[in-house]
Image (cartoon, rainbow, N blue to C red; front, side):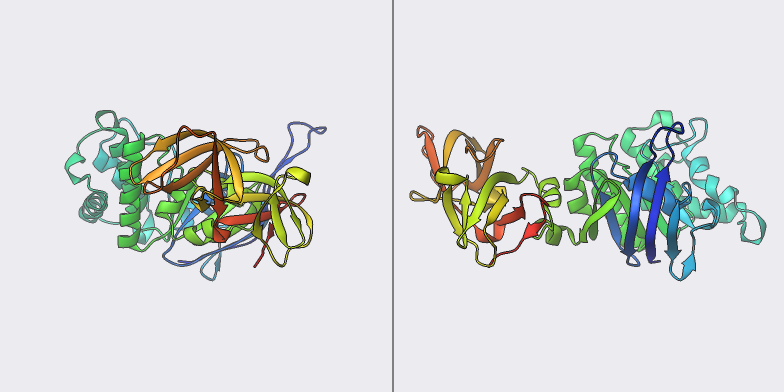
Length: 367
């Protein structure tokens, strides 16, 4: 089931007449292809959960439309949308067994669509097997780990085989190792079922690893949508470039003069790249950690602070006056860096170096 969102807006009123309202989602357009896993990614408060709850029907849009396929779902109540929702805090019933929790959505079905007890039992077992908890059917939530509880919540959402599966930061309560294992399971389940899935997270590493497409949001506005690697390699603005990547992108002040890029300004600027096609102006320069090459006569000189050995790679920690933060350059362990030296010099890889207008922060492309 493809999901289409057109000009969606959600405004929350202020606390009183004198308080301004809050626009959580602002003129949002989104087309989610059938059978894909799409991550809504952004910082806390960017509107991603509000958008999810409007798709679900738990929040009413101020304006705009929501379509499932060709059907307008904007005013359809949640129980008639055919969605499954997995909450951040699991929301399991503590007095029920796993079997009862998974069967609960089926027991609430009325009329001709209601299944027999045998059919409910069969579907509950199928959902439990899908998330690999069929041996826990007689336990209660208090007798299970966090990861097991999360699987129960997913099974409950899947038991009716919804048209759309919605997941609101489902891994945030798990420890790092269990989070990694569970996100792999979610990806496996989504591929096996082929259910269109919308996954909300603020963890960019999680979004990059699990999704077919990511939607990067800020202040209720869609900034960029695309395949994870595409968005990482080709960000449209400074926010997207800064939000994606671990370690994060290194940002410098710079300027373009006569088709050349200088990091730093005025007489202290270092000429680092040819950037044809960009007019003279002040810019932000973003360099991915893997965008540095150590060179004895490199164009960019930095003050060496330390070396972190990471096995096959080395993280060179350094400073430059044009950057207000510590710079981290990831290079191959085959390179030799003199730890006793005070400076380290780099050449920059053009395809890992991005320019952004100093005022608008929009991407400037060069050849």
